[in-house]
Every structure is written in structure tokens, then in C-alpha cells.
Length: 129
Image (cartoon, rainbow, N blue to C red; front, side):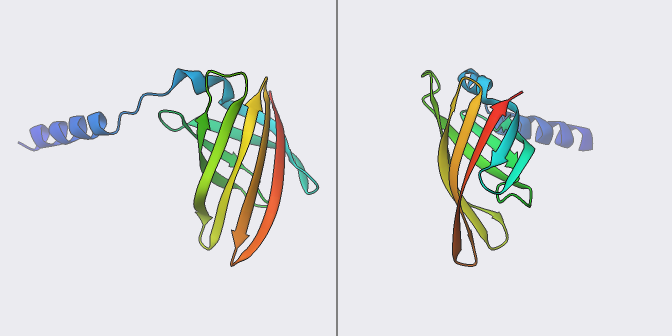
């Protein structure tokens, strides 16, 4: 009985959690040599898939601490892909939002990080390895 219950639970979870990856976003996935303009660099910025046309970006967004954000990729079939980072909490009390683009192995992100009401604007530029 327990085996049947566990098997049924596993199958239902795996079926519900399946999200096909949009194959058009594959060129943006990878490791980049990146710099936060005027603050830090170089460091490795990492982009992985998160289902559909969504990606996860891990980087030193403020030049000092590692954060992970979710981003949406638009215009996948165009030569320039748009990157949208919707407003999200990246750490307790820290909000981030922004946008950017990817073209020919180059990435640029312009974003704002808000810490306890204090806004700071940043730009990351990266080249894919």
C-alpha cells in the first residue's frame, strides 16, 4: 500500500512539475565573464534554464554579494533577445528589477537594487565563454 501511495505521489508530482524548456533560449544559457560597471569584476555570471522562456541568473549584482534572480526572455527568434527581470525579493529586505539584452554572446543588464528604501542603479556587461 505504501509503495503504491509513494509511486502515485511521485508520478503526480513529476507530471505537474514538468515544464518544457523553450529551445530558442538555449543560446543565452551558460557562463559569462562579467563586470559591474564602476564597481567589480571580472567574475563569472551564470545563466540556467527555469522552464519555458524563463532563466535563473546568478551573479554579484551589487559587486559584493551573490544573488540569484529569475528573468523572462522575449524575442527569442530575433537576433537580439530581451531580458526582463521583474521586481523580486532577492534577499530579505532587498528588491531588484531591471532589463537587458543578449546578442552574439554578449549580455548587458541594467537594473535597480532597493535596500530598505535606498535605490542604487547598476549595469552588468558580460561575454559568454
